[in-house]
Image (cartoon, rainbow, N blue to C red):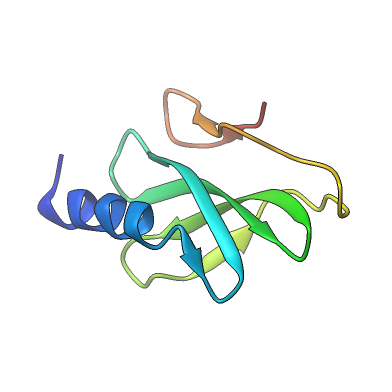
Length: 84
């Protein structure tokens, strides 16, 4: 696993409570270019992915407060994230 990816996973684990958000279950992509994770923001738990090259973030789910998406998992070729 690349050093940058290890650092980011450790960072996300420490960054669990930041700006009123709770981040959980970081999962690196098989190619090491992305990380998927859950984040509790504004009362809803949604799944996000982050591009490790530029640290841009994209929300994959759009759940309302009181609902949750948990445990993101990558498909084998890093093309998609399965949401449980």
